[in-house]
Amino acid sequence: MTWIVVLFLVAHGLVHLGMWCTPFDPAKAPFDPRRSWIAVRLGLEKAARRFSVAFAVGAAVAFVAAGIAVMVGAAWAPAAAVTGAVISLMLTALYFHRWLMLNLLINAVIIAVALQ
Image (cartoon, rainbow, N blue to C red; front, top):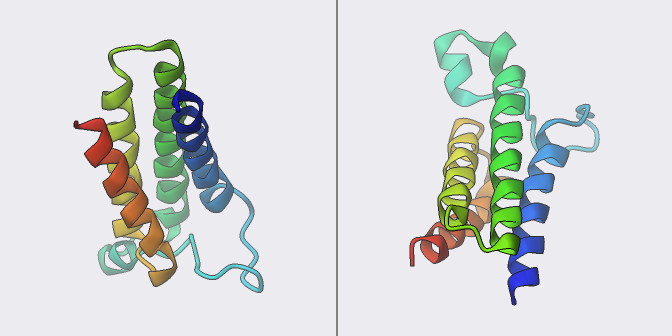
């Protein structure tokens, strides 16, 4: 069971990198990771892509660290998992699109399990 948790956390982190940090092709992407509803309102549209990459890297690092911590039995594994999930939730909220709804559920489950 430990390996499943480790693989899930690491995979979830790597998915963030794949979704948010790869070059954007509007013809193939279901949503635009360069466009944040709040960045538009604040006039920060040019910085929106940098914010999304920074949040995605932060979430990925936290999730991979959480996976490694679970693997070695470190006491800080739940804190790392919750940190990654919170960063991921912030990313989803700032760049909200209905395509990201599953991410809300995944992160809620990660937080609920980590806090038990």
